[in-house]
Image (cartoon, rainbow, N blue to C red; front, side, top):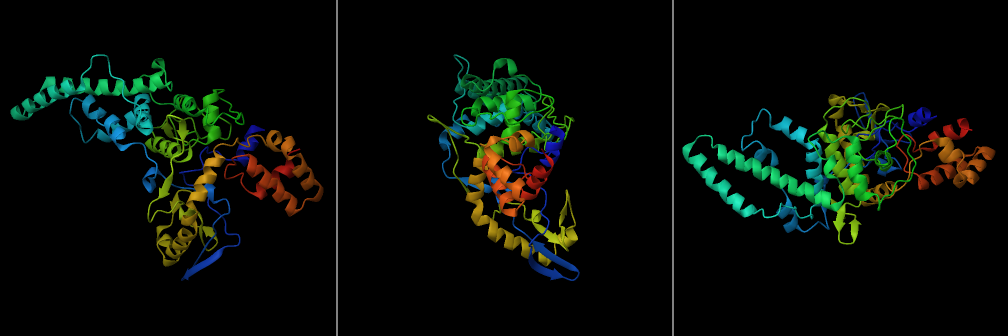
Length: 412
């Protein structure tokens, strides 16, 4: 049953901040014809499912105090850890490995929260250490030779500053000392840290069932739709692998999955920590930003202009595509706040995971299901669809009357 339900739903867990399935042109709007090419587009009704936005595309109207953010931020760990030596050849690799490690993830999370003071060891004097570093740095520059003491002081600064910020997260109750090591930040690790943070403002609804884990935090992460927690068609999440944009058992390093996760937390979850609890950030779309991937909605000669990850750039650059893109942007951009609000509301809902359990046998929908099976009318089908959408956060492949009609006709 689970395999069939997942096939109907999707193999991806996150609907936001990722490329989504393109729309076939039903009731399309003609745009332009260039030679043998006819461009059409359709903006879907469930536009929030196609929300594509990240932190760089918005401004935050209620940010945390800037002085605290600057005072507590520590972005020089890799430089300090390496004793001041940074190789251009290995810089990117080291950065990605750190970003996807437990300590790197936690440091990024600390910066996301922004207002937790670092917890330094008793008696530690940051100013005194900085003065020692300046003295040894000057000696190295004057001699133009490697200064081992300078490198050691940088490494000491790096470890103390990192541990001070990890300790702040420990004291807040988000992670335990026993969980922290130099290993990768796996799905299970990430989910448990975030679940401790947000379980009170977004409790687990119990809608998700996976084949390879019963860890409540991982189930919660899938239910919320966190990027990086893609489930395959067999119902496996592979909890001991790193975050990935696509489903599968391979333990690849994908820094974008971690970046997308933090985008999602910032924009969709109530990620602003205050004395009263967690609140939503109020965000505004920056000028010239469009909160969808316009190519998701464009067809050329009746076929999606984007086929999977492939785009015919010769066709893509024709005037008809530009005209369609401008018209889509004009329709979509004013609806950003509505899209964002709906996406936030959806993230609070359970998932429709097993259609028999969640729809056919669910007393919440008994009246609508019975009415459809009696009349088979479009009106009664739409009533089922609207009731289901109101209750569940549907995956994009679930979110249509056509899919629900198939469920109602096949699942007894």
